[in-house]
Image (cartoon, rainbow, N blue to C red; front, side):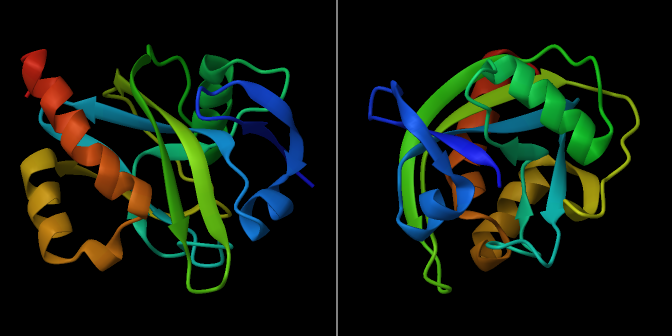
Length: 174
């Protein structure tokens, strides 16, 4: 069973908890969301349909949790490779925030999420155990889709997408 890092509101480590307990009891834990972009497009994935929550919903390029003895950048690199077959991407953390969301199945996400972005123009190969689909999409088109059909997206992606767009605009990347 995967172990997660329980944290406080300042993202300080408290203890290891199982992934099951973290989501069953709504224990705040460290997480990350990675978004890869090229030009005005970002790479999104559709979560595998059999995920324990948010199965079939669209989300950012990759999201997961670091291990106790692993830095966030190491964890992001590891999971980008495991989920999308992507390696050697320069990533920058642009945001961190805490959020809570209770799912219909009784599970809850209570995460201190670190958001990373990176420019990437290479190929990807999805791991079907992690993602049902993935595609590049224009960020403005994505924001319209999300506005019209928010139920098709993960709750954390709805939170981070406006910040991603603002960051890319401020850097004159879109």
